[in-house]
Length: 315
Ligand code: BDR
Ligand code: CA
Image 1 (tube, rainbow, N blue to C red):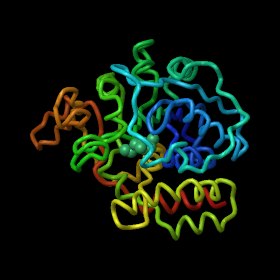
Image 2: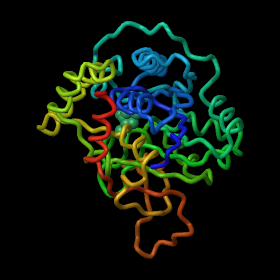
Image 3: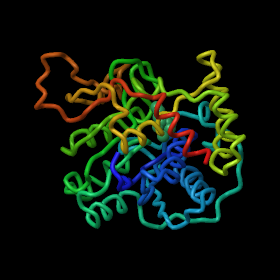
Image 4: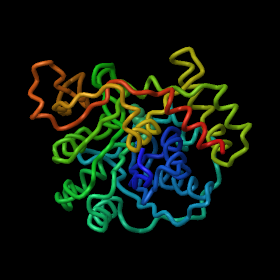
C-alpha cells in the first residue's frame, strides 16, 4: 500500500453494504474520499442521497460533496427490486431522522466529469450501485475515460450464479445498457463481483464487537445491519451477510487483496429471456487477452479485508 491515500470518487445507491463501504472510506487513512454521488438502485435516489448525507454527519465530514444522480435506468421506466434486502429506507428499516446536510445541486454525472478534468490521472472511480450515472457522464464527455486513473466497480458474476436473477447481479441487472457502455469505454476496469463478495461475509459476533467498540460508525453499522442479516439468514441459514461494496472499495485501495484475476472481454447480456443483465465474461483459456476490456476478480482475501475493516470502524 502506498503512503499517499488513494483518492476515490464513490458512486453509490446507499443501502446497507454501501454504508459499510462509505464509512470505511471516510475513516481509513489509506483513502481520501474526494466526493460521493448517488444513484437509484437499492432504494429511490432521494433516499440514497439522504442515507449518504447521514453517514457524513455521523463521522463529521460535512465538507465532502454529495451529488444526486439518476432516478431510473437509461432505458425504460422507473423501477427497482423492492425492500426485501435493504429495507424500505435502505438502512434496514431503522427509520432514522433525515439529515440536515444537503446535496450539492450538481448532478452526479456533472460532478464525475468535473472532477476528472480537475484532477486528471489522479482519481479512482468506485461505482457500487447501478452504472447509470457513469454512463451518463461518459455521454456528457467521453474523454473522462482517459482522465480517471481507473474504475473499480462492484458488479457482475463471472463463474457463479446471479443474485437479482438466476444469471444477473443486482448492480448490472438494474441497468444493463449503462453497464455495457461502462465496460466499453476503454478505461482500466476492475470488476469485483459475486464470485468474491459472497465469500466476504460479516457475522453476528463481529457486529457485536462493533457495537461494543462504541464508535459512532460501529454503532451505526450494527444498527442498520440487523434486518439485512435477518434476510440473509432466511435464505442461507446462517446469520452472516455479504460486504459486497466494502470489499470493492477495499480492493480499489489495496490490490494485494486480489488472489486471482483474469483480464478478459466482458459483455452484458441485453436481450436474453432468462439472462438479461448477465456479465458474459470470456474466460476460455484460448480467449485473446488483447481483446479484454476488464480485469475480473475471481478470488480475494476477504478474511484479511474484514479484519482491516473491523479495525478501522472500531477505533
Ligand atoms: C450489489 O447490489 C446491491 O444490493 C448492493 O448494495 C451491492 O452494491 C450486490 O449485488
Ligand atoms: Ca450498492
